[in-house]
Length: 261
Image (cartoon, rainbow, N blue to C red):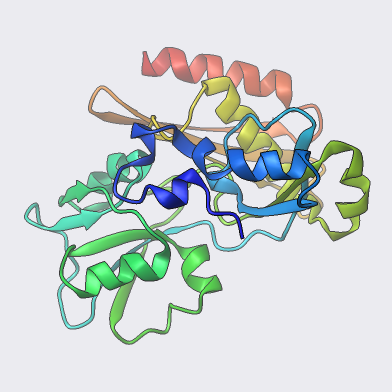
């Protein structure tokens, strides 16, 4: 087991000591050195630029992309301005008020069970977590908590949210290809491409979600994009071709950033 810098420093927000790269740098070194063959990541926690010679070689089918507000059973949904909401995400913090949650956002670190334990102990009135993580850990049936799902329109997810990605050496990508979900890989490529164009990491309140419009995924991709800036939340929705999407993504990001200013 590799314990990364991001795991070791659990009392500070990621944006204060290196961003998402602190979770993958040491793992990437191990792959390149041949100490391990691949690494399994939550795609939303991966930096948009990977180490030379490495790539995302496989993506598993996408889970529920929504964000969820979790609070203690027997209490009211924590909507008021006096509520303390735990989230380390600027993206989530920027969008909460528009979802009717007026509470004060404070940073929270640690894995999902650790965060829920802090909620149970009263450190927070609510937590914002990814539905996918709660589902995979079989926590959505826990009687100690209540759950409120935000729609994709209310709270635009993080790029790569709900996708499990495998990182490996580029020259071994063919080995993993039969395991990969084509739709998840396509959506992840578009989302990561847009984030790169926006030069966005965990220091910015940015969300992006790409979805295939047709069942086969060969036609159009519906892309929803958000950014928090100047005390406001900006959103836009567009359609990109599923094939040669990059020139259209360039234009989409250019226009959107001009609007945000």
